[in-house]
Image (cartoon, rainbow over all chains, first blue to last red; front, side):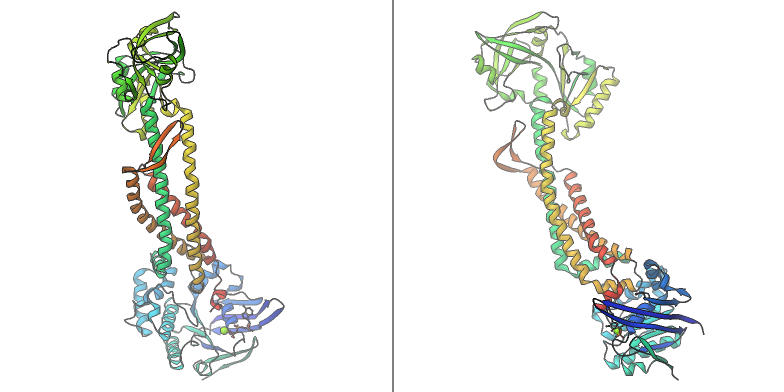
Length: 229
Length: 408
Ligand SMILES: Nc1ncnc2c1ncn2[C@@H]1O[C@H](COP(=O)(O)OP(=O)(O)O)[C@@H](O)[C@H]1O
Ligand SMILES: [Mg+2]
């Protein structure tokens, strides 16, 4: 299977005054195309740090990150910005959406940055809206959506730009458990249907159950990495 | 364009704040427009006073006359010359003059005077000299060896209307000019400085007296539009040169009265300070609002940057947002300023005390409604707002998604 991500001996050290934290200690990991993986671990284990480095939002202090064969660790800030736009989908814990844009405009946004022609944008938006179950809500502003609906729009926005991988840092942390499971079900469906690679983090035992591969971090190290049936 | 849509909606997000900032710009615009308008207005009034008082909007002389006036630097005011001037559409009226200096006597009293020969009827069309006659009468249309004298001359010589005035000077042929004139009228009062030591004769009498038959020293021009003095003078100069009067030149009143012009220019600078203060208030207002907005939206901008919005786009978004507010405020400001300008232009505001500039006094502050009263405030408000918004915009462009996203 083709590797989407190759992380090699990545380490990250935070220094705040006297205190230094080894947030990641020579973590190595590969993610294959089409995987649906969870990054688990208790709070402070380094999940966010790892996701930020994989997505190019942060730079590691050591090691290399490759996405689709390209070394992200060597890219300039503006190259990284374009790279993220074209190859990475993001779902954050909350406040994912641009408040002044409607649902459809939010979904359209990244495609607009990518320069996708208008007709195609419209088509893709309509299609994905139906898939994530938000038909009829295209004209709403984010504040008029529930937390679960907002996360669905975020998934739709990530999906529609056709990224190599979608990274989600605790996407369900602000949702009740039913809504959280529904969101994960939907992400799984997207993964199954379109083969989109997902890597999401969580510290919620129940949410981890959705993953087909469970990578557990502890104190900045990979503690276990298991593929389940 | 999505970026304009976003910028506009961002403006509507904090309505109160946008309104306040907008209002600062609106008021700034109006103050600016009034400053420019009243400056142009009082400038215009002053120009009107000086040009209609004596100078005219422009004058024609022998080349070099203004640098070093001389009895001998004269020229013939031929019908061809008048015809050439009459063909210029900008020219409303013209009047020829003779200039010299003389000693004036009444009985045993004597004083030095500035001697000016005028064509009474034409002079009426160009200047308000006739209105300045306080005692007696203005010169009759035909030469009758009469004189108009300044108030100071009348006082020093103790010469009431009807007195016999002896003038002694030098004729253009080198002879001594010596003749008698009757005082027809006295010009101005003690407060009016302009005519104090002048004596006016009919131009024919003056030519006769100075043996300058058919010659004049200057022709004063009045234009239809005082705001177009410079281009009009350029055209008049070209026209007389083209008509073959190569030794003549046309000079605007700014060249005829350079000192007055300089004083006025200096006075105009006074308005700059006022504008600078308005500018600072607008700048601080805009900076404050935009900076606050950027701080509040740190997370949102962080998300936008994370999903691939380039720093340049984020920067533009904020500058455009401010630019839109500045544009809207300017439109409203221009609309409201029109009323204020109209009031000043049509009615004016009376000074508590008359203001004296370069020897001329102003009683009312008036405004001129010129394009500058609109485009100057617009340019300054708009550019200031844009420039100032770049500081927070730069901040937004530099937002690091990791930091912004952590500030949850
Ligand atoms: N910006 C930072 N400055 C200092 N320490 C940090 C910073 N970000 C994370 N850390 C520390 O690094 C470790 C890993 O954090 P994080 O990646 O956020 O863990 P998780 O997402 O698994 O909860 C924690 O000990 C955390 O306190
Ligand atoms: Mg975390």
